[in-house]
Length: 278
Image (cartoon, rainbow, N blue to C red; front, top):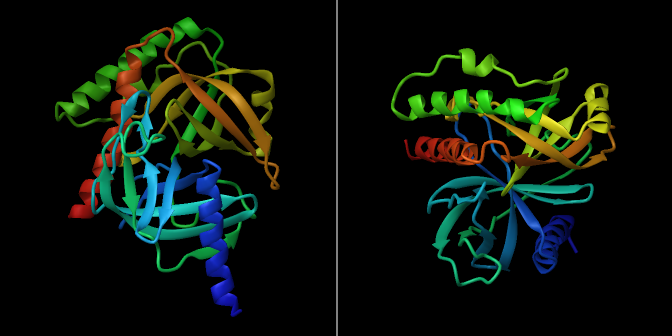
């Protein structure tokens, strides 16, 4: 069998096996310029056919954020040390009910004509054309102290929605009672949390603390950064000794802040979609 055909069969077979096991496709909205940052979603694969790949809708913090027909995407099949990446687009928006696992609806993506295969020699945030958002983490020493900082962030985002330009100000520098900062990158975002990658020199805080204050810069897609507290739920170290950390966002001391965070994520998605249309 020719080598090219063998590689094609390999990624298609891997995609079908992921679907059977309830696995996920990593997806980001394609950008045509260098502005902004990319959000990567891990979307469960519901069906794989010649007519397309069906994935669950992205969502965050109790809010469904369906992708619209025509939206161009970068997609990644990730299995162990193997990774395939390809461009695709949304062919169909599927309402809830057609797929039992897709309770919040789904999207059918175009099956690619070809994929690029590469080994995952680097960290999760080394993902070719993507520019993943930087994340600042601080060990949170007093969980109750987050309320004032979250409220300032809510007011800044509300002003942005009303059309007022945002300049970094007091709400960006206002911190709860925290320890020394750790710098990371956002690997992916999910329903109620996020995955981040931390360099070895800064990973020590992850073994000493379980609660963090998080600041995520979404770039000009949403110039008001996401801030919230988060619980560390799991970690693992990759072959480059970088630490991947799974975080679950915690709104226990300010439940209303969850709505603001969800709206910030959605604003970033819709901004990227609008730019494609222009």
